[in-house]
Each structure stands twice: as structure tokens, then as C-alpha cells.
Length: 207
Image (cartoon, rainbow, N blue to C red):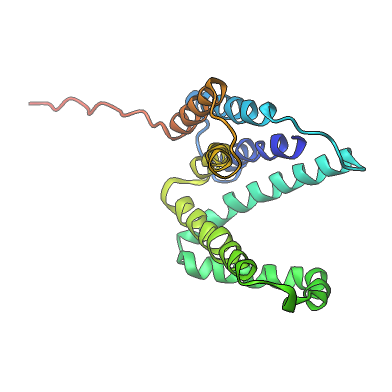
């Protein structure tokens, strides 16, 4: 529960950082949208009956918070790159540099894995995680930043609990309730408000 709630802080950091670095305008509609989005997502998370099983909850909370802040900086700082490079080029370098950084930590685990014990379904699951859940997801995120901006892209993070609730209902048998409906409404309202742009009326033409 702690991790889920803290992760919801990412769109807030994105909006603040974008307003600071990219000079994106922070409007009342965006502020109201952030409140609605956080309220709806938090409502979904708080409904779950979870227990604290970690040995160091404070450390875990701090790490999740750091992750949210650094990921927010990534979403904001990658936007100027999209004006010069394509999504594929940006993702190629992100994954290349990321692979180099994770190699010292992941290589020992990779070499010690018993691949012969894996079944076909396991390899299919890994392929899905690597291709659809990672590469395609990040590629679409980078492309959306160039199309709608960092703040609006970050706001769509609020929709993750909705899809999680739908998948949980399909695969885990969880029931859809009125409270979940209210939470979904708040999240969609938040996404709409963050993306809302006031249409200015055209100036009168002199005859």
C-alpha cells in the first residue's frame, strides 16, 4: 500500500518539474486534476486489505519516493530530445545505457539461473514482459511526451489502477463495486482536467 501510494506522487513531481524546467504553465485545472487523480487512485489502493510484511518499511518508502522523483525527471528531460530525435533513437540509447548500468547487478543472477527448468509458458511470459510490458510501453511513453507533453503523459499514470482493477476482476475474481466506480470517475476526471486547454475566442475582425 505504501509503495502504490507513493508511486502516485510521480505525476505531481512531473507537473512541478515541467513547470520549473520546461516552463509549462501550471493552471488551476491542472491542480484540480491532480487532486482528483490522486484521490481516485488512492481510493482504489486503500480498498485493498494489505499487510506490512517488510523488515524496513521506512527504507522502502524512501526508495519508492526516490524512484518517483527520478522517473519524473526522466519524463520531463526526455521531451526536448524528442524534438531532435525519433522515439526509436531515444529508446535505443536509454536501453543501451540502462543495460550497462544494470549489468554488474543482473549478470550474476542471469548466469546462476537454471534455464533448463523453464517451461514454454515461462519464456512466453518473459518475452511479453520484455517486449510489450517494457520496450513497447516505454516507446509509447516517449512518443506521447512529444505529442501531448510531460505533464499530460504523467497524468495518465492515474489510469494504471483502473486497468489493474479490471484485470484483477478478470483473472483474480475481484468484484467491481460502487466505490471502484467512484474512483474510476475521479481518475478519468483528473486526466481530463490535466489535459484541458481553454479555447480562446477569436478576436473580432474589423470591417
